[in-house]
Image (cartoon, rainbow, N blue to C red; front, side, top):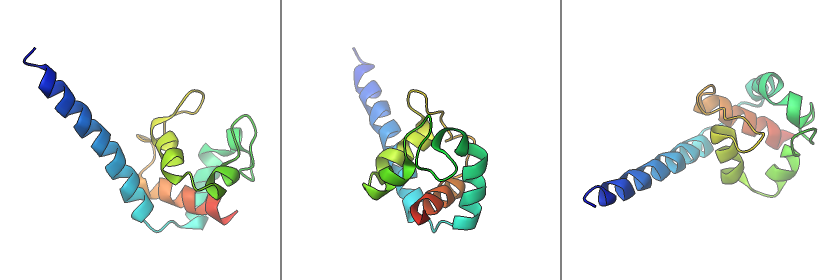
Length: 104
């Protein structure tokens, strides 16, 4: 029973770290040229060359709907068929991809 408060503290800190990373990424200025390269390497296979969808959903539509935090969470942590890129892509890479998708 004495470990229960520690568990809740640990869970709260873990959630905060995720939110902090998303906040950090949203504060960065993305480079669309670099983002196109990262997108071509990591995203085209599922989301299509124009980001309008394929086996994965349209990122253009998600961007237009203003789902930034949710989509960045998917990029970082994955979900279902979406692989997690949080360990393989730096914050700047993710910001660059997001800027590129937003430019389409």
